[in-house]
Image 1 (cartoon, rainbow, N blue to C red):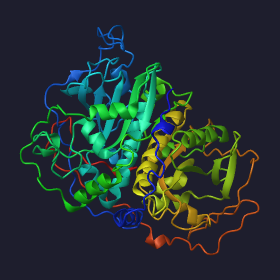
Image 2 (image 1 turned 45 degrees about the vertical axis):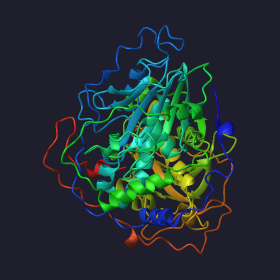
Image 3 (image 1 turned 30 degrees about the vertical axis):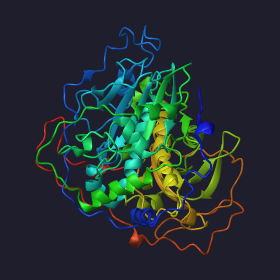
Image 4 (image 1 turned 60 degrees about the vertical axis):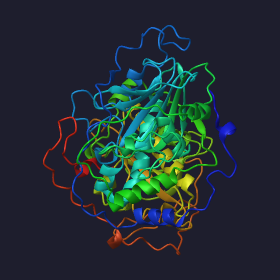
Length: 556
């Protein structure tokens, strides 16, 4: 499998100091301030006109092979059905790929070359209808395979989560990228990029380079998607490349080829839609546009996407976010160690991972380097603390295990903030599929406040924040209501300690560790409580776009 990381990585990439705008936004989203209540925003109809092309049944299309003949190597019906498609016959809100509030803001633009089950060209994918809307031809001489540009339409997530929305949009995009990568066919190589320049991604997808700003490039089409009434701006954040095995493809070069002169279709106009974004929405769009800028390395860094060995198409089809009541039984040490390995190795540029476990041996565990076992970071039950940090979702206090992605200092540069959140969502998506293959249940947790894990462990404050989580539970063994976590002797004990919070059972340190007296406990009174669910709005759309707000149980 080709690895273009060393060829495309640039020294000092992403090391610019964080801007004041980004530092303030990080501090605000991690604060205890709850989002204000806003009216529910129904899902808009799919913006691209026409009936769309069916994806099923085209895998044997004549001329579909890489050399212009034979069977298609990349069956897009299968790839998209196992990743982004809404299950047939359902309202479409609950899909295999998770999303904060079941809002699904991520959109996929398919840049298709030879070797796929659709003719070469630029397409927009409709996950509800499982159809592809052709928007224009492919560049001359484009390499085989498909390049998927992932964008977000932010309005509904911002309306639901307010100032906490933009990290959730990044996490959702990471989950979508993982779903696509895991669904890649065995005869294809998969590369994933989280740091390509947003303007280049926009140009490749046939969109504007920046939301809420005119396109002043020579020859720019005046009726591009973002300029039509009611067509919500899309912010590109990531890309996934699927190439037939044995085909040498330059992923950054392919991205640049698609970003040439744009001959793209436009979405249908939606009269009566808003012409000016609300202040909070405009701020979120501007921040994501700022984060996605990468002029020093526009083509980005592309990493191979390994698929955990036990994950099959069947596991991808069964993958779902489990209800909290199904997550109360701790997994055993071996599956937990395997899941932590998957999380840690999913992305080389991703955050660190730790697991908080309940049962008979409650503690914070990390994967032991060079072995199949676990290390103890701190002894004691951290789950009640995590429940308060996660927007007051009390069910987390009884979860069997909670895997935590952490890092992203408060002064991290924009590129690091973008990559950390995208990689956290990506790794959580890979772990969720792996957990399903192992017979475990799981549920992502995206919203975290005052969750300074490093400070709670006696380390420097502000350097090691929780950015994402995944609750994992095992099926209850017959005859046992609350099975314990079977702890084998650790291979190494690290000196660390959780600082106990008020009304939280004390957390004792691992042998040889001493708690830090300089880290004050996080006051429970300052922890947020979840806002009341917004009352359902009167349905104003077709059944394909329900106007029912997500309930609290569907929050990440």
